[in-house]
Amino acid sequence: MACKHLYKNLFGMGAVLLCFLLLLPSLRMLPVEAQTQPPVDPTREEFEPRIQNFFTTLSRVGSAPAFDELLRGGPLGVPEAIAQSAELRRSVEGLQTEFGDILAWERLEIKRVGTHIALARYVLMYDHYPVVWTFTFYRRPSATPSITTSPPSWMLIGLRFDIGVESLL
Image (tube, rainbow, N blue to C red):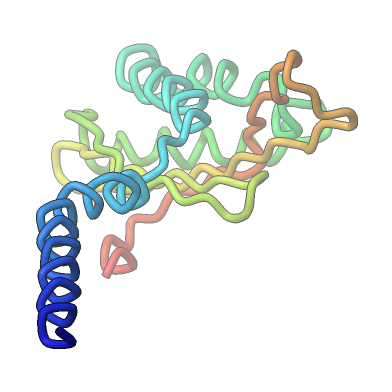
């Protein structure tokens, strides 16, 4: 009698194990795959068009209008920073004299440093040489965060270029 009871228990446990093995693949796909997808960064799109517009204007019209548009609304666009941006403009004009016309540009990376700072690196390809650009953006924290209000926009707080392409390695 005890043997019959043992077989009944083993049969029940086997049925449970079989059901578990059949359901295991579908259970594995639900939450794990959702977690492995990289999170979408909506802020990336906010400042990328500004950079694209800067390079387009720089290549077609020149540095003065390109910088005026890029620096507007941020701390680098205020009168106190004009001397610094004028030096940068002259340096950029020298690039075109030295390396030729701008042919294309490519985004290398966008890197978030915390939640309020982002670095965007691009390579600007001239006729004779590539130049690496780094844009630093800052988004100040909202004093009263709310679901209904949009987050503050990204301000350009730093801009530099580097002809040392080896720094990318």
